[in-house]
Image (cartoon, rainbow, N blue to C red; front, top):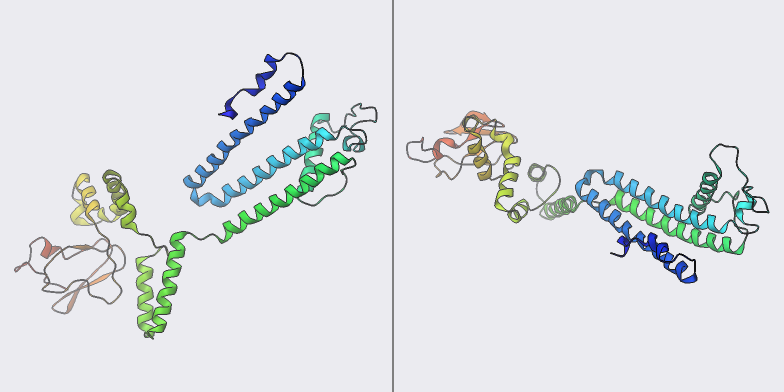
Amino acid sequence: VLGQIPWQYIDCFFPTSSDALRLLRLCRLLKLLRLYRLRRMIQALYRKHPKSEFFITAVELVLTMGTVAHWMCCLWYLQGGEQEGWIINAGMKDPDGNLIIPNDGYGWAYSAWISAFYWSITTMSTIGYGDISATTSTERSIAVVVMVLGCCLFAWTTGRITNLLTKTSICGARFNYKMEEINEWMEARNLSTDLVERTKSFYMLKFPTMRIFNEMEVLDDLDAGLRKEVYIEMYQDIIKIVPLFRACNEETQREICFRLKPIFRAANTTLTNRGDMPDAMYIVRFGSVEVLHRDEPIKIAKRGDLIGENAILGLTVDGRRNRS
């Protein structure tokens, strides 16, 4: 709220200059509180564009350093007009206080600002070329503050970059911990090499993105309408290539997507057996499934193929599965 008050109009109430007016003018600094909005905007960008975290962080670091350097250069400039100050030593004013206009065509104001900004950057980065240096006690005091601030800013920047480079997603870390646990368990149980490889392949099939998350818990947190939309988005690609469902209208396809449940099976394991009571029919989404009739292979089901539809649709004699 304090940042929204128009402190710049305070001079209208005090037409004559006084000590009280000078103190009240400091209230203008309260407008810096509005910078908190910028912080919230940056956080919103992180949430909206998580894949651009490197770019957003780089922009944030550059803007932060540039803003702090600008504030320090303004403070440095205000103290540079003293006798024997840096402005005179830099040849921008003569000893009588008269401005010396540079011949670079940019004007005196820009030359003064860029010189102060240049000093601020070189001091904060601890480079310090020495062509512009502190000569008065006030300037040395400011230089000490800027150098300490530069060290703090350097530590903060290094920490942010290190955290960004070493950061691991929670789900990715959970997958790594899970695989470490499985490897140690298989080693302790002295499982065969073939079984170890099949177990690892199963987990790579179940978690192809190498991230573990509780999908059902996430979906249960959503309201019914949004949860249904998510299911449709997840499974509409496979529904559209299944011949039986492709002939259905769009609303029926959306309802089928909402009813699908993912299951995973390792290689060389049985999905259903001949003679079992049907409880579901299956759609192959990844990999392939061998279909057997009386222990004889009759089909290799691939992506988009249905399995077990005869029994579930009542097309078998005794209502049980007639294939494995």
